Length: 302
Ligand code: PSU
Ligand code: MN
Image (cartoon, rainbow, N blue to C red):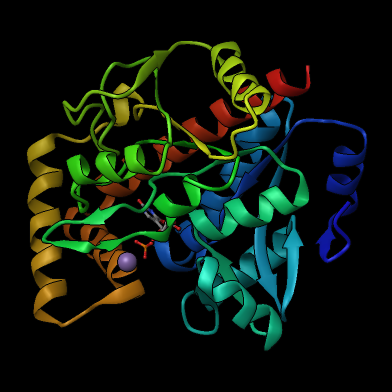
């Protein structure tokens, strides 16, 4: 056990006794959805993981302490504080928040680093960061982290606020296998397909586990991306999602938003512009990914 981290008793026991654990990020709570949908979603994800017989570990930083697992009250506190008093934490932010005893919500990159420190192998989320449309030098730290930290990240692809072809190019350069879970193409978050080919289709948690085992056997240390299409019933018409994304991206440019603020700004604008529709697709994708993450974690420990 890494004693620099603070575990809930349930997760400490699970890790010591080899039970399946799935990590969850906290940026989607503080910067992804408005209150109270953020808190409801975070708790729904924990329940989805439990329904598969695995244990959820929501990761965040409270007063400089890295927490592996939060209570429901703490999730509520994070959700109410939102982006105000809580820093969005990728790799470069972690020493700042820990060293200066701040509060932090972890991104995909931040969550991967901490999950790896904790000995957790699977992490479920919604969309990963990528290369921003029209800003090819704004490459999310998520992609670089996937290239160097051996965590399996279950996602619904990436939102088309990103340049998806360039995002796949960077993943290739970083040596990250992109598995399509029951699909031959990269899912585009709100819709089931971007039309872009993935590296390999897999259909079962056992196949994902076989790829993870081979990565370890070969002594490779990169992450693996498992991309799961949003459930059919909750997918959004491409044109509706696309129009909202174009408008949200235009508003971000016009407002001079840049750096780490772009993704949260665009996500919340898309949500406003499409009302309940994008939120429903978003939550459905997250819950579905949490279930798949639970199944993969169970297969790894079974
Ligand atoms: N994409 C989503 N939902 C999210 C994020 C991305 O559809 O909540 C969050 C994740 O925490 C991701 C981060 O790791 O945004 C990426 O931010 P950036 O582009 O600044 O690296
Ligand atoms: Mn960026």
